[in-house]
Image (cartoon, rainbow over all chains, first blue to last red; front, side, top):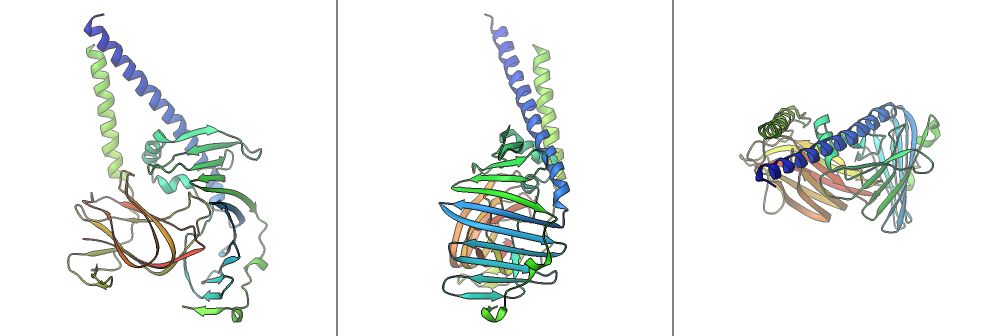
Length: 209
Length: 152
């Protein structure tokens, strides 16, 4: 076989690989964009409850996040300790209960509230970044709890092998699998009433500032 | 043969054009410096210094536990070209996992901090002048901290 012919075959093979890579990436990119489009309807909702059950290194933690208009309540419970956060629309109060003490911080600066969000947009600001991250990502159909889902893995460049099960029709994440960390997620809409936003009796807590 | 080579060159050129166009379109969402000129002393205190510039500051913040390994609190800052991006951290209680990414989404810093006195951390060196992403996460109920992200 002549040298010219070998080079030609090699070039065709490289070209084919590039085309297949681009096509596969486009497929993943389109699925992710569709999921992002679907979740938009839910990120603007003003009455919902999210329940997370997280298992981290064998320890179970329960998270309950309630939102109604401009009010929110967020409860985290694990192994006899509780963190209760209330926002009445004006300020956020943080109550912490451990077996040893009960403390309250009024007008606390709380970050990391887990509202319904677009997890893909958190990693990629624009379509180009989404496309680049899609190269390495693994996206495949995978049902979870009888719901049609996509399993998305490695949608970031930091090599943490996290998997997300995202519902096809809603774009909501139903399950997350990270390093030693598994979380199941449930959603309820238009079912939150004002009673959940009543704060505990502050006199039972030690004030911290 | 020439056709194949020219086709490959075209694809390469197309990638180059897309890459540079996208790089200039990255949105900058960072807050302007609210701490004008700050630096960190050897004893961990903050003191004014002409060559340092604050990019983000938060005092007595509570980062709530991440319900999933995909939940991170994100901060975006834009250090000057050639600058070193640093973080002064006072972690009162809890643990904090910190990651920093370059504009090309590559990891430049990755570490965990437990309740510690003050720390001065280098997040990235020789910054490009573009926006850097810093991510925070805790698996404790709450991590309580004060933080200054600055450049020098």
